Every structure is written in C-alpha cells, then in structure tokens.
Figure 1 (cartoon, one colour):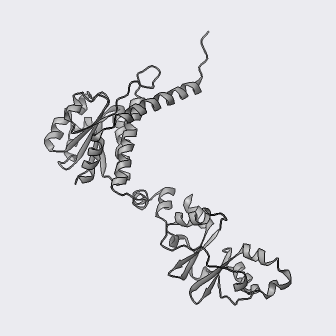
Figure 2: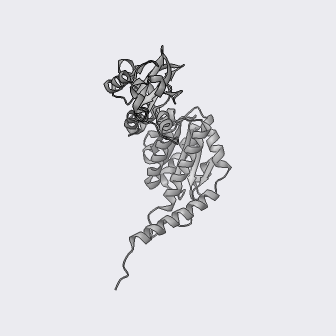
Length: 323
C-alpha cells in the first residue's frame, strides 16, 4: 500500500529548500554586483537582457521590472539574436546574459558579436568558470547546490535565485537613481496603482459652489441649513477667503448637549480652530494618511493654499482613488 501524499508537506519542503539555496546565493554576492550597478547608472545606453528557456522567461520579468523602475531595459531572446535582433544592441548598452549552466548554445553563439559591438557584458550564471562566464566583465553567481524539484529535473531553486538577483539589481538602481513613487506612477497610469500614485488632492476635492462656507458669526440654525444643503458632512468657517475653523457633524452632536442654549450658539462657538488641512498639490494618498494615521480619525479635510480655502476633500473621495 502506497504512502498517502501530503501536498502541504511537499510545499513546505519546497519553501525550505529554496530559502536555503537563496541564502547561499546571497552569501556569494561580490563587488561585481556593485560594479555592474555603477556601469548601468553611468551608461548612456540601455540594459539588454538575453537568455533562452526558463532563464529567458525570468529575463523577461527582470527587464520589465527594470523598465518600470527607471532603467531603460529590453529583453532579447538569444535565438532571435542569432537572426537579426542583435541590431537592437549598441556599444553604449549593458547586456546581461542569463544561463544557469553557462553553456546554453544560443547564448554563447551571440557573445562574440556583442563583444564586437562594444557593449558591456554581465553574466548571470550558476557556474562562474563556464564558457559564458569568460565573456563577462561582471559575473553574478546564481549557483545553487540543488533544485527544489522532487525529481531534480525542473529548474526551481535556480530560477528563483535568478529572479531575486534581478530584483536586487532593480532595487539597487532605484536607490542609486533616486527613483520616486511619482516617477513610478508615470509608467503605470492605468488601474488602481496609477490612480493612487498620480492623483492629487486638487483632482478629487470639492470646490467652488459646492463648498459649505459660513463666517464665524453665523447662527447655528443657518449653519445647519448650509451643512444639509451641501451634503459634505462639514462646514468651513472663513473670514474673507482665509480658513479659521471647521465644523463637522460630530461638532454638532457635541453642541446638542447644551440643549438650553443650542440655538444661541454661533459657528465660532463650536468650530475646531486651526484644523488639520492639506494642500491642493499634495498627493491624494497623503491626504488619506493624514486622516487615518492619527489617534482620532477624521473624515473631512479642508484644502488650503497659503491660508486661503480652496476646497474640501472627504475620506470617501480618497478611498475611491485608493481602490
């Protein structure tokens, strides 16, 4: 009778093996990694990733990550390089050739031409003494002792090591190039990520005729009518165009405890003076953080520029951007 297979225990074993192998690759990081980063930063060209098979697939992801984080990068399949795609490489480029064995025929076949073109060559390989490594100015050792594959055939630990080395390269370049979230947003304009990183407070705030505004002497019954009519959950108290306070629905509820004199109160009596505000040029995510990252959360922020009221932004508006 065969022993029952426990998929979870297999999964745990795979994680353990790959984590162990990654630690070994981490320990082999050398000065070549730093030198490659410097070469890319100082290059006037692009990064060209090349490889075949599983290494090629990982190379495509590395190129995509680099391109989206401020380093111009493309992937060139080594086989296509043999049939004309080498024309996309210039002498100003840095080529990163990926082969775990360092003996992939297609990758090796294009190395002499790349050398003649004049591009810098970096090699990601599991064998730093392989034929491919001989072409590299920079060697990134991704060698693992064993694959996680239970039958030791499918590349698993080695492809994970290659992917993480690519991520490490991208991360180092992000720091070296001082790449910022707003730069990242320019390359990701679609979907929720783009909205979150590109949207500014001025894009979602309520302004103009929609703004509920009263002066400090406004009677509370008038104030209530303004709040109800504008339906933004708050009223801004201004002197001229300058913001001097904010009244929220919570302030109204607290004022109701003074039943005997409630209707004799004015806006000045119940407003929060010097409320938390945000600038119209601030990112929407910063406004959301200002509302949420505090001891007592708030749901409305006045939008102020040089003391002048420009609008109101609600947490509901910001959550729509975040989604």
